Amino acid sequence: MTTVRAAAHVHSEWSDDATWSLPAIAAAFGERGYGVVLLADHSREFPAGRLDEYRAACAAASTPEVLLVPGIEYNDPDNLVHVPVWGDVPFYGATPDIGGLLAKVAADGGSAVLAHPWRRDAWRRYDPAWSPLLTAVEVWNRKYDGVAPNRHAAALARREGLPSFAAVDFHTRRQFFPLAVALRLDTGRPDPQAVYRSLRSRQFEAVFRDRPVSGLAGGGGGRAAKAAGRAMEVVERARRTSAPVLRRLRRN
Ligand SMILES: [Zn+2]
Ligand SMILES: [Zn+2]
Image 1 (tube, helix red, strand yellow):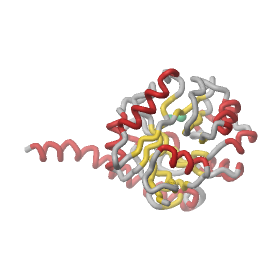
Image 2 (spheres, protein in one colour):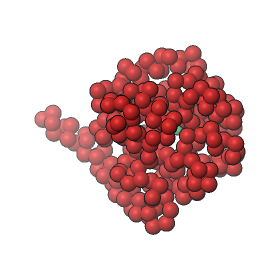
Image 3 (cartoon, protein in one colour):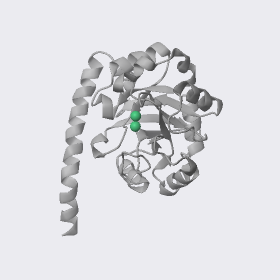
Image 4 (cartoon, helix red, strand yellow):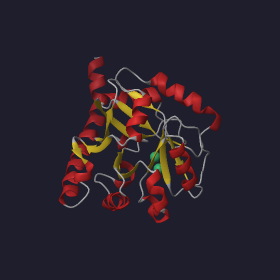
């Protein structure tokens, strides 16, 4: 048994709205202490015939420090509900019906997570029939919820009896943030199959630094997380501005 920090919900240049290459993602997240990156590239413009090529590219860009795990973030035809999917599963189409998608993913042994339920009021479309088919709910999405967990999303997860997920929803540097999903693996070293098993059997915990997000999502914990989150933004901004200076200094 090992535990590894995963950066969940990361977009690469395989998405229509992101530009980071897979090797750059491996390097940047490795530098920030992650051992796994759960990619979630958009379904909407995904070249359907290229899933194998995408998987091979993730394997090729993985390093001894960081495993890149391919994944697709599906959206419904109205672009309201978003569902990242991981596992040894096929491509389900650019804009699938979400109920049908979840049933197929469950039948195929994959894992599906409800993303940012408060983006564009996606939660209004929530069908309780989805609950037994979902693996988790994003209660903190860095891009849409900002520097604190979303207590409405946390309440939805609690109501439906679903585990919490924490997502960086990485598109640009702005979304680096110390959120992780701590995955318990049944192998010594991460490999995609071990990660899929961990997700499927819900052997994970969403964390902000080392603290479980579930403990932060209600009441005063949320405020503490917000303050800590703001501080982290400052650190990350300092890192961005100092990096070019340090590079220049090193060159001289
Ligand atoms: Zn999304
Ligand atoms: Zn996304």
